[in-house]
Image (cartoon, rainbow, N blue to C red; front, side, top):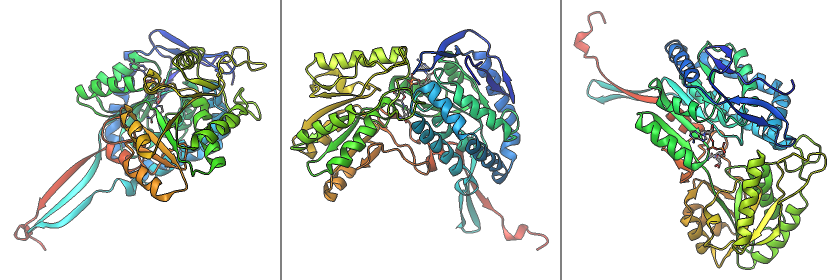
Length: 492
Ligand code: NAD
């Protein structure tokens, strides 16, 4: 395979050329090479996918769950067989290192594995003799057509927070991936096609806002899942809900790590560096603010500068590279502008990654690891999701002050504490107002068996992605109350 790729939709069991206008270029972030041109997204294509999904639904929901998951077992096998190929595609279009792409894909596969447990997971419950002669039964049924809209930073993993659970529960499914990374998920859909799923059960429609709006407004779409930035999450939540759909929207983040003076210095520094600079900081669970308590300030500042400063930045496919580029030149310019703003407002650049040059990659969107010390609390950066390899350092007098600071932030995706004091860790776990919490963990990413649990401005909805929440989200509960009087029985 080589560039330029043709970006096609997968609708009703067929690969089709998108209709409507061309959209933006899909770039290799390391080289600037144009990999493909994504479509702008057309309402007609969305309608075709949704209508195919609606036609496929009655037969698909009638298939026993144990039969439905056989397709997922095949998918798991195919993803394993094509693991390296897909990981390379992720790196090619997203820029992250090959090791990070492999990690991402492993998480995608885990979700397929968990959804294979649907015959157990979607069971209901019942009570015999709920009242005299009356039994009560709760059954779970699929909703119909479910759709997901996903971001650029995990091109192959995030769609799998939704797709396996939706189809295993008996729904049909339409995916609208990020227009910036359409390639690796298209390859996954080619593998899905090989699993023998009936036509229309899964569809892939590329595009940007026009495709999203068409999904939000289509009357046959019963449920919408969204992952992306908070302003768009809020918009999607409001519009889908106004149209009467079930909706879950995961948004952006500003994650804090609190470092107590007793933290293990070496592991804390390494873990926070991995969190802040892994995937070039483009992770919704990346630590972006390190809050040191008391004397942790001095040792942490020097240690993180040393570790971050030694990271090898370059093309994610090259050996030994520890940090790849950011997604686009526009993203690089935005991040560098925010670094400049922080410095202008009084932060000291312990490490300044602006203007970094990588030999052999003159057109790459590289930003070096950046550490800003003392971003003032008045700065708008304290509320801005930079989404790049930038770590801010601030200090607090004690744990309560650090937690109050986290509570004031409008986001609530994740927070971490680094300490060897169990009671302090327990207090943090109990009080900190974020949906994911790390204790001596830098990327508090829930495994597929647990919900991906953002709070506050990082999540709009009730039920999260993954785990039991996914089963709840993709099923409706039906309660049946039955009376079968003995005297009606003629034969027994
Ligand atoms: P984004 O919000 O720009 O795009 C996400 C999706 O929304 C894409 O499919 C895009 O086509 C669509 N979209 C963009 N603008 C739109 C608009 N105006 N109207 C309708 N649809 C629109 O996000 P991104 O830049 O692709 O991804 C990065 C963001 O995602 C960050 O904020 C990050 O924190 C967040 N994220 C959150 C989680 C989480 O679990 N909370 C996980 C990964 C990423």
